Image 1: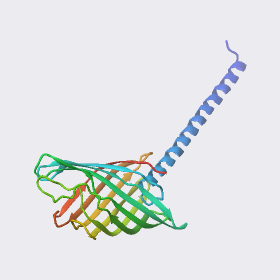
Image 2: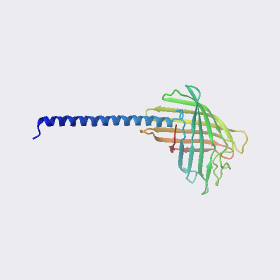
Image 3: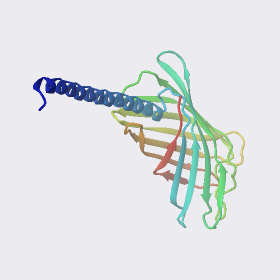
Image 4: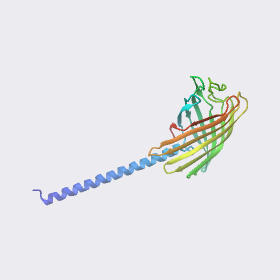
Length: 246
């Protein structure tokens, strides 16, 4: 029979072991929660174009039904964003869109692929952030489209052969795990070129963050018109977004 004097030290050692194990589990859980909180905050900053980070996202969108024949269209956009510090309260953000498109012919079986019009915006914004932040400035569009021939049954242009400029504004809302907002550009053509255009582009986004920041939805819509290209409306309701930040 084990003596009571022997059992008591064993019970004390076992009790200390349980307490140490529980404390280690609580500490690990706290460290994990801190890591997830830090990762969530970094993810939210990377999703906010006004955060002041250098961003380099790539957005891919797929539209399954375009034109009278319900063909698919694809678009990939590189969106570098660079902040320029003015002082402790204000900054200028340069936001550029470099789009590559694959568009179906309206009446044929072919596609039109290549670079579209590169657009860049310079936005003045406050570095003091809250639930709502904003930026305003202007944008410039370059005549970089690889296919600017008039639209027809067998040709779908990837863009316009002209320069364009106009105002730009962005608004961002952040609350808890949510990051949402929109960037709006209005462009009018100017100078020499084979076409003129009048275009409004709206890029909306919404993110709900689970630890590492998972995008709930991003969308892009544009309405444009020109002499050889009648009114065109596009809307990509869902897009995949990957990127890096520093």
